[in-house]
Length: 226
Image 1: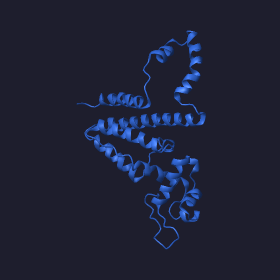
Image 2 (image 1 turned 30 degrees about the vertical axis):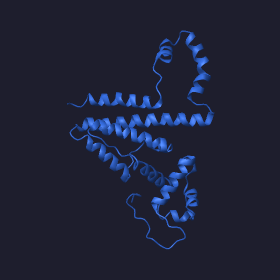
Image 3 (image 1 turned 90 degrees about the vertical axis):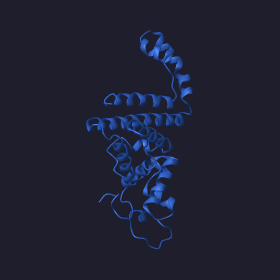
Image 4 (image 1 turned 120 degrees about the vertical axis):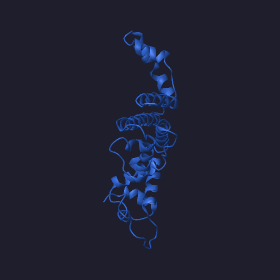
């Protein structure tokens, strides 16, 4: 029986009350503070001031704990709007914002479908907004938006982590590598890249995300009859 369906132990007198919700909340706080490497059943138990064995009545493995953590974040993602475009846009923006609040979330999405109740509720809202659109458009359209968001947020989170690891923000990194690029472009071997770097738009992360998302939604719209 999957963790979503398995009942929790019945209440009993104990020095510290326990529930899956409390366990997951503690794990999310640990991950938010120090990344997924800070999450283990032992560390979660210590944060809750209980023995590690007490957790096994609620969660059998660390993988179950990670599944519950992901679903807890999906509770923050509430796609809304009038019509398919607004709902898909809302899904993308809300997922990105959740990943910014919980960087570790970006490491756990994009693989096999998440099946927790909050995740399913969000999926239901998105599919319902596509009502009237043929399934052979609906399914790849939703998959394309999810793939775009996963790629975009992973790129942004990787940039954040690089800044922390190197002590250089994006502008400082560009300044450090700028002279090398100028020398490379001066050889004449990379004229197209030189034009993009020198004359192309330099968008901030919000503009980059939303422009790319609009391109994607425009393409989906072209597949949907009026």
